[in-house]
Amino acid sequence: MVILTKSESETIFEGEKLGLTLSPGAVVAMDGGLGAGKTAFTRGLALGLGIEANISSPTFTIVNEYAGKIPLFHFDMYRIDSEDELYDIGWDDYLVRGGVCAVEWSGKIPGAFPKETIFIKMDNTGGDTRRLEISKC
Image 1 (cartoon, rainbow, N blue to C red):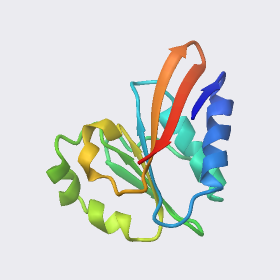
Image 2: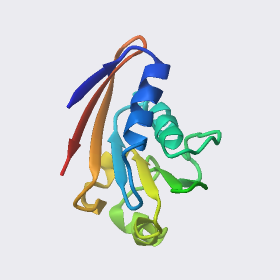
Image 3: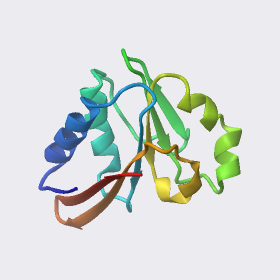
Image 4: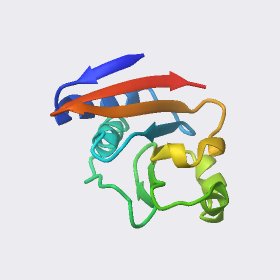
């Protein structure tokens, strides 16, 4: 499925719609360049999960955790160099903790995702327009 959004608020709204459908253990793997809308989409996921926290990119911390009925574990793989490094920070543990894992820069760790992962390829197509291509394994 391909969705075009024409503003940050539309990108957030699309994330919120997806967040409303997610259950514990879900993984959303987002890939796209700087400014593609990954963090905005994650803000929407959080809203859909009922989390009203200030969602920011965990670029320097690798993962931010947000409490909720279904917690959100927000990963940024920009600084991860290998899947081994990801497993060293406890990736397996996050997958079974009963939350939703939202992963930015997922293309850096293509073999780390479970079978039912939702993949989103994101592109800035100019101005405020974003192209979101959503697929499942």
